[in-house]
Image 1 (tube, protein in one colour):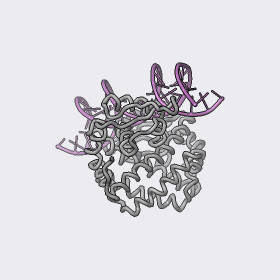
Image 2 (spheres, chains in turn red, orange, blue, green; image 1 turned 180 degrees about the horizontal axis):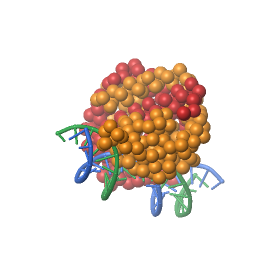
Image 3 (cartoon, helix red, strand yellow; image 1 turned 90 degrees about the vertical axis):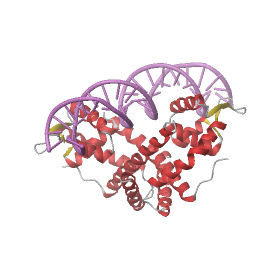
Image 4 (cartoon, chains in turn yellow, brown, blue, purple; image 1 turned 135 degrees about the vertical axis):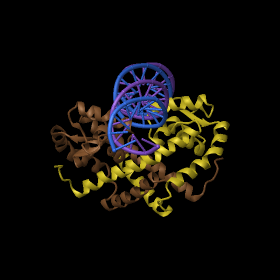
Length: 149
Length: 149
DNA sequence: TATTGTTATACTCTATAACTATA
DNA sequence: TATAGTTATAGAGTATAACAATA
């Protein structure tokens, strides 16, 4: 017979379970979508950040999408070979290297990004926009709390 | 200049981003926790299901935690070698194999499960129990909608 | 001393597909 | 024909730690 937990502990475990399941279900589809464009899901997310920001230090990419420094180097290498971004050394701090999206990268995303957004949106159609906004606020608070310990 | 999206599409993309970040942040800690007990995170989740259910067909484990059939075989093999569960063929349908938790598996989880639950709970302390319940309902609906297309 | 980024290793998980045995 | 589970392969991602260059 399993040990009985507190209500509060039970709730947190349950949240972890449904969070994982929702994440996996959406991610599986997002990975397939990225693959159609010849990109892994990490590559897609990195380009998505650059498409919005234009140029950003490598380390900040890791903070934004929570991947390790090893994974950053690995994925930036692949994207640079595909000519979708380039490395640009910083002048102010010579330890820092920026990733900058190329014209080819911008053209690719102009083409595929609206389609991708529409796909993600259609995956979430079971939840209204108002509910999505509630979920965003709660998950933001949750994620921030975890990272800040 | 990035293409401007609908409000509704923007919201869904944002939800995907914060969902991913919250998931990764919590999972990173949960993986470390499982590792302390000599288990990978998949192994831990499978045992967690069996600890609650006792005995369950292999395929239903895949449905519960969204892992592929290949991963099920792989992880069940490892857990069986550690003597934490055993395979039990079904009498009714001879295609079906149950996974059943062993005494050793139950003893292990009696020991580590409350501690694990407390750790997950403490990770989520930035969000009240009421908010967690709201998040659970929304994520349940979201995940279900994705899986049912 | 601390930070940014790179490199290298080993491990976990995944996707995919072919396969068997049953139904 | 469809389902449950296994096997095998290749690839993606990770943790980890050591490292060089710079602050």
